Amino acid sequence: MELLLFWIIMGVVVGIIANSKGKSFFPWFFYGLMIWPVALTHIIVTKSETREAAAPAAQETQSDPVDKLAKLAELKEKGVITEEEFQEQKRKLLAEN
Image (cartoon, rainbow, N blue to C red; front, side, top):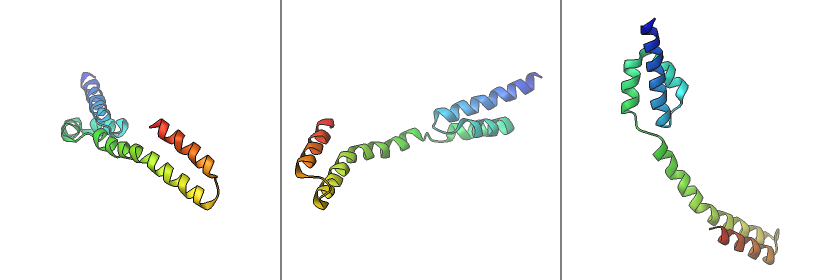
């Protein structure tokens, strides 16, 4: 009985470590439940995904106002919005950043 409890706890430990590295908890928990010594070693040597995923997100937010401004200019050129509306939206965009 103690061995079964230990095995389950090790599966949870593997899942928690995986979750802290940006991986999904449940697949790693089940992996750790089946063969925890291998899963524990595997997740320890696996690199974290949080840093790699954060870098593109930061780049997207930096270019976002530029993209919005370009879209506004395109709408103005097509005659969808007036010059006054364009200038107002442009001021709002620049004030946010």
